[in-house]
Image (cartoon, rainbow, N blue to C red; front, side, top):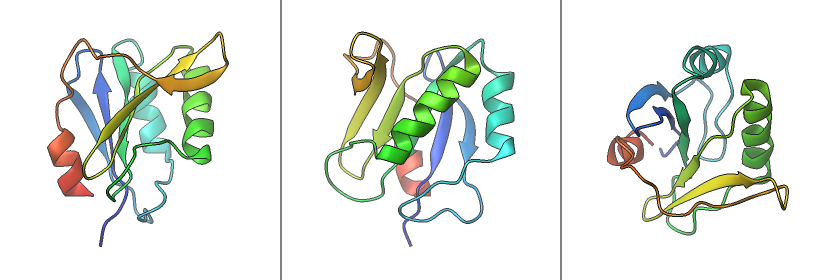
Length: 122
């Protein structure tokens, strides 16, 4: 059964942590104290968090995703990259202060490690 999975990566695209909590589903990925502790511990080198939507199609963030993105960034005091990975596509989202919305990121300056593994773990 397909389940949402996440990976935390550093500012060079290297995997720091796999987030595969109990009670995850195909449509939700629960937050956890463990995840927050990883984000906080690595905040100085943190690049972002990629997560899956385990189906084919457009990689748009959900309303819950966007709320979570913003809460994490406000808590950490920094902006991050938020890749959403479907089985056949990847979209990367960033906060745009001018519009106060998440928008597609431009081309990344590094390769994200672990994307195929992220899909397999889903």
